[in-house]
Image 1 (cartoon, helix red, strand yellow):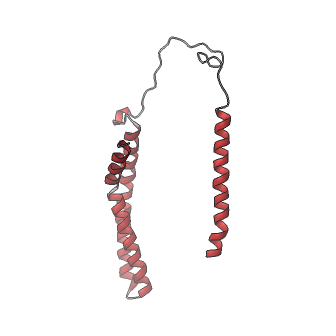
Image 2 (cartoon, one colour):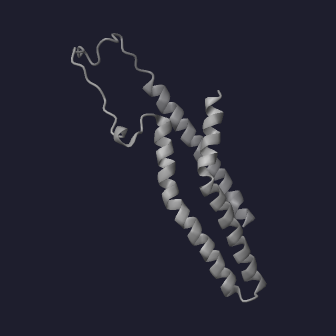
Image 3 (spheres, one colour):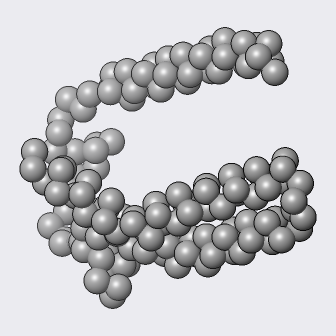
Length: 139
């Protein structure tokens, strides 16, 4: 098991380095082009027609990036809460089927422990989100 992780680590590091190199190389190429006449784009003169972008999420009350992320987290929580309950029920099933076998009891105990930890994270996600929001707004 340890030798397999030693083989994976260099390839993982290489993938990260190559990915960063590609990202930085593409950024320098993209910023390499300058427009000598900023009033035109591809020799097309601007018009006086007023255009605006319409927010497709405005009907849901999302008017900022922060509101968008809050809505995404709320959608994720709708699905995550029942999953936590199912995992706790699964841990209870493991306890019942262990029938005194110590290895099965250990597996059931660990399943319950990690289910409860996941439940704390899922049910406390709004609190965690508010803490992060308060920290970011402080800067």
